[in-house]
Length: 228
Ligand SMILES: *Cc1c(COP(=O)(O)O)cnc(C)c1O
Image (cartoon, rainbow, N blue to C red; front, side, top):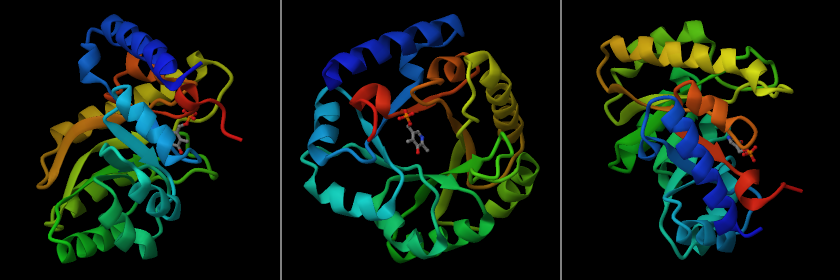
């Protein structure tokens, strides 16, 4: 099936899931994850209505972005090392994978040099998995409080990659925990912090994520086909 046909099916599923959870389909943003895909494939998704794309590696984005003929919002979704913050700030519109104040400080420094206010999400390792990056849930309040002094940063929400489990019912509790952290953080007043985006849900679990409160889903293989 074509990218446009896949997107049509995904949009229908997003609409159903959002309505069944009492929200409007347009309140859920769909980010097309273009890692391992060509610039032409990313352009095709944009022509089919996608307004944001996600990449997980700085190096790949650096090569691909100049080849795009469209201008979607660019989301960094992969683990970011401090020494790559400089490139990431120039390449991306939002960095979803900020997992420490140390990295935040580095991004702030580079954003300042570029005269830019950088949008970021705080990544949480909700399953406590050693294989995944992200901060522990209990580190979040300290992160939010500490973010206030970085004037070239705007924390706009939370992101997580849920554990890969056999059924959607098994992942549901992790999405529920994220929603609670998101609501708690929204009540916690801190400068430069505004909880607008809850980025969770991928090809295999986005329906459950939306039912539990996701406002942003990041979908790759269901749009472009399986990655090799
Ligand atoms: C690859 C990736 C996705 C998309 O995964 P699919 O299962 O292909 O939809 C989403 N989020 C992150 C952080 C990723 O690295």
